[in-house]
Length: 121
Image 1 (cartoon, helix red, strand yellow):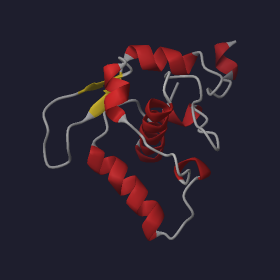
Image 2 (tube, rainbow, N blue to C red; image 1 turned 90 degrees about the vertical axis):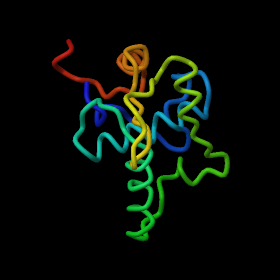
Image 3 (spheres, rainbow, N blue to C red; image 1 turned 60 degrees about the vertical axis):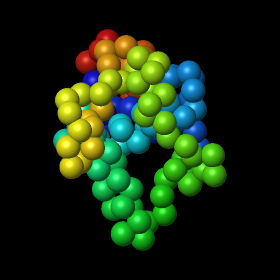
Image 4 (spheres, rainbow, N blue to C red; image 1 turned 45 degrees about the horizontal axis):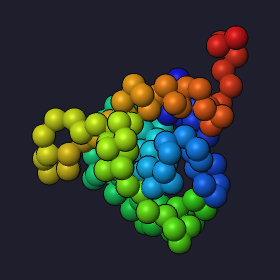
């Protein structure tokens, strides 16, 4: 399973996956950043997330509907507190990296948001 295998749906991504909307929004942001970068599960930095959002704004593209939601309040700390993500390493100029835990990856593996993979049959 790769980040690009996860469907980030409109208007509310990953509904009923990580127990809180704010955590699901943060996870969605992390997933689109990873899918857009190298499509691997690794820690991301706040700066990478900011660059992704800035890229959308600089290209004058409309943000995805789920990011344009007036209630869009991604909360990475909520993901960490609930055990779905963990801080990795030390903070540097790009911020402190955060990565998904095995608990989160397992939730994504069995979720309805994962694209079907014929090799899994």
